[in-house]
Length: 422
Image 1 (cartoon, one colour):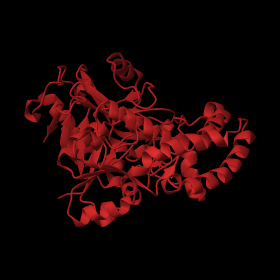
Image 2 (tube, rainbow, N blue to C red; image 1 turned 135 degrees about the vertical axis):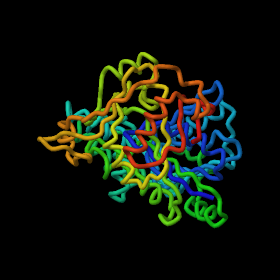
Image 3 (cartoon, rainbow, N blue to C red; image 1 turned 30 degrees about the vertical axis):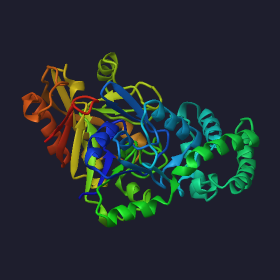
Image 4 (tube, one colour; image 1 turned 90 degrees about the vertical axis):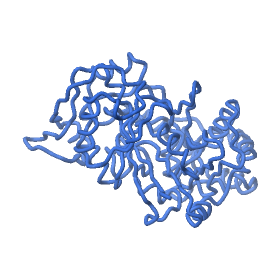
């Protein structure tokens, strides 16, 4: 049985939720290992559409077990709302969902601090989702964070919250904000704690029990490679490691137990928020938005769109150790007569085959394009790779060759049925 890490190979929103949902059919355990409610996975099952932020997409498969790992930062109130949403859809999570007792908590003061800090940056805003993710990870690194183990112990939580809120309110007021109420936070979080307590567990041990039992484990990545705090387009990044190494540290998985790293990428490129985007093209964005596509699952913001960037995705393959690929949204290109792929960057008279480190340099690069003929027909009903238009197959095979990994999955829509295995 294979243990697979699934990673976004671009700037997030690659369709990971759908691919996870498809692959979970043959997995025993699905583990989310980083990020927070700033990520969103959209999965369509039949006529129903689910948007999940913290709970792994695998929960939509009956009898599958799911873990929210120690590397995730959790807003307990948001998680309860997500559980309520699943309950309304008659998805039973009892005995199937487990939350790491080591996972850190996102607090209201994290959101307040982030909002004040972003406001002070003016035009230099990072463009965060204002969910408090960065400050929560900051407290984790500063060793002042609160964890799920604290949340489910009422006396311990109250004492630690009182101390932490005092310091946080000083920061909020210094940034021009208004201090928060201890009583309201304590009441809201105690209520959430009572709902979440049955799910809290030592999930590291659960991962190792599954490894010992030779179960197949699927590690669900959130966001994408170029939002990684170390490997992304810094400072326009998230606050966690979104690359494959983060799946190990965020779950307790030993690196030598990884069998495959599956990279998910769109047949074109998108990103949300601020930051460099070499292949951005407004005409593609207008086309996709007019089709009702490319709006953020978490923010609802229209995504920025552009041509496929083989330079960036090739580097993502290297950084993550990606050996398998899933290409999604092929149908988004159905109307185009010509399709471009960026194969290199021009910067200061030089041609680069890698992504520069400095965000200002990335902003200045000029893409070098290779043009491919479009197929100009509807592919959304195709269920067999061999029946996909020849030009569409040649285009996706060119992506595979340019970035150096094998395509094993092709997707032409959000539904489970719109998936082909090569």
